[in-house]
Length: 127
Picture 1: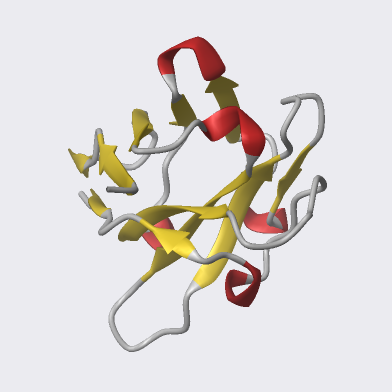
Picture 2 (picture 1 turned 180 degrees about the vertical axis):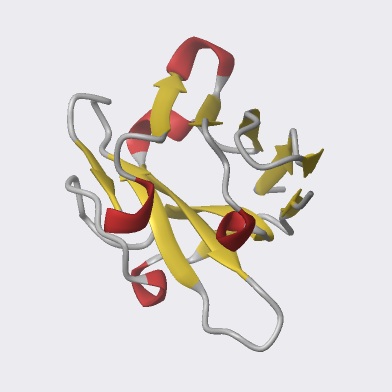
């Protein structure tokens, strides 16, 4: 079965760091665009970052530029999100997703374009 499983979330103080992982099973990640999204209670899901098939092209929402870095290790079938200088407004459930049903090589931050989703890992940033 096709699965995406996130890990690495937790509770940190402002200014702290976390590294999230998105591990795939049942398919090979290097064939697909991968994105990270987040959703806080009562708010719409927001695209955070994405990476293309080659790993050479990435995108970030303005609020995380300079603080977050997305990368992929196709040999390990895993995509990472390194998060530095975390802020309280980063608190959310973070999910990874893949585009598997369309011939798309460039990534975007629109949730509707992604069709395979993990269940998420919680990130909480507070004093």
